[in-house]
Image 1 (cartoon, one colour):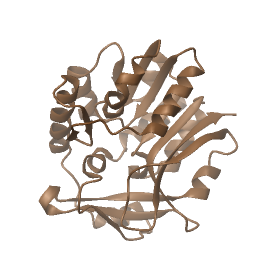
Image 2 (cartoon, one colour):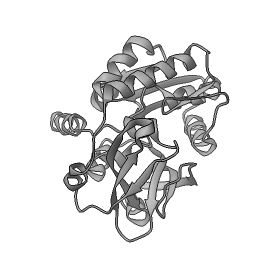
Image 3 (cartoon, rainbow, N blue to C red):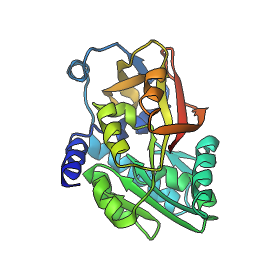
Image 4 (cartoon, one colour):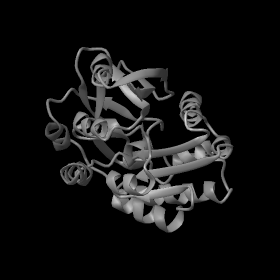
Length: 270
């Protein structure tokens, strides 16, 4: 366990910031281009990001939702009505049904609780909910100060969360494609033996291999560009097939300017 703790700490320490792309995804003018040989090559032509600026935008929007001043926030953008990912919500409720109406989940890269607040009305009908977010330090610090309560918790690493709440489910929603070594991260996640693994808003291609692109945001929004993976669908699912079964897969609402689909799925431990 000590060695596992160190390895997971290491990959979280080097975790590339997916929040920038989650904040800006779906806005007009976003584009993906390139087919890079390595993360380093993509980074060489990327402009980077300002995490403190992104955090300020997300915090302001999330507080409005928490305080009832807005219905829904996704990627720092406020909406008058909640836009549900119904298949993901169904998956969450189905998982809770396996545990007498209890849901104990890690939301990996979950910002300041966007997915939790999105589904809070339905989650409140469950007998017990523990929604645990693993994020970068700036977000965890802010989450603990302004958003944490008896249900919503923030952690710097998975092991600390596992030691306190023992969640059996982990969610990756629009996050895994922004990690430099996604399969290394997922290998470590599999080793932790979660009963359920969920994905949403994950990009796929059908070209026999993963494609590494550069995602670019136009200057009128926020000048930025960053590496982003598009996963070969067969390879991605094959990665889990020995240990997990597919309960459901579904299409997400995101779109890109290159041939691809954004999808989600629910895996259960065999």
